[in-house]
Length: 396
Ligand code: NAD
Ligand code: MG
Image 1: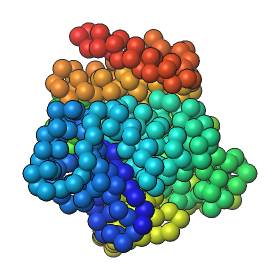
Image 2 (image 1 turned 30 degrees about the horizontal axis):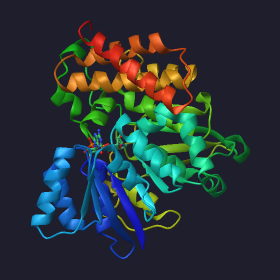
Image 3 (image 1 turned 60 degrees about the vertical axis):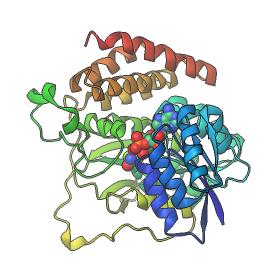
């Protein structure tokens, strides 16, 4: 029986994780669930899964949750604040930690799980984008097992040869006859929208992804394709590869979740429904396979597969992320911070959709040559970039 901690349990990935776990009560027990606020949702999840622990980032919410659970006659112990999250991420009895907090807030709990050598299921791509080299060094030094949840990276992982998977994906891809990783993306809701009307894009339009149902931040990132940019950086670290080893391919149907091209001309792809419960089930069971509640792919109901190259004018954020990746760790830390501020401001109705890339570009230009390798330097750069991005909000 594997003991599972779900960080960010109330979110889109968290809920999908609980859905897969619920189908396999003989294999997995829920040790702990965490969330930021949202007492009612976490309470409901605690009633369903009966975890030993729960934690809420917000202390007032934690108190409320503890009272509700006590009234319901449940013994779940409730922790609070960052210390609560860190304690559960690193809990000695945890075997698997699902890292599904959104944004930089997930960094420290995810690293805490890595430092205890856990099997870490990484959904929180921002943590890896922020800290890249440091994160991967910690994985190696502490003997953690890192399994990608992001559907593209999970797909690539599945298409890699077993020895690379067993080596934690840190082998030389060329030694195994791999020519390229083909990172697919749908292009989001604005693939066909006339560029002249981008200024008028509303929040409701931006979060309405054509294929995937996800949290708000990643939905906006998918609309700007910053998500693919973050995934490009994520892939470089996860698979130990150069920028020239990765090609971004638009595939609007979101059935092929990514591919690996070999030097003999073979291309291996992972296909499936656009439903995160497939990569979650894969990573929970790896190297075995378990069923997931996802309906099987029916090839006779699929219409066509199409592919194209992303246009720079439509997706400036994708190209900013590639430029940041080429510049180095500081640039990617800064870009991630800028983007979190800009997306939150867009969601709050403070800036336009097109202003997101303006904030990101100005921050990237300012911090392009910064180097940040140690955790303290990374956190300081993250804070400095956020402060600068906030100043820019009134000007874009
Ligand atoms: P979401 O917004 O639906 O959920 C986020 C979760 O994190 C919630 O449980 C929330 O309570 C918690 N949280 C937010 N801020 C927090 C804070 N400051 N402290 C502690 N907890 C906090 O997000 P999501 O869509 O589930 O995405 C989660 C992560 O997974 C993101 O990094 C995203 O990029 C990645 N991801 C998501 C999908 C998807 O389909 N949703 C796919 C691939 C990758
Ligand atoms: Mg993805």
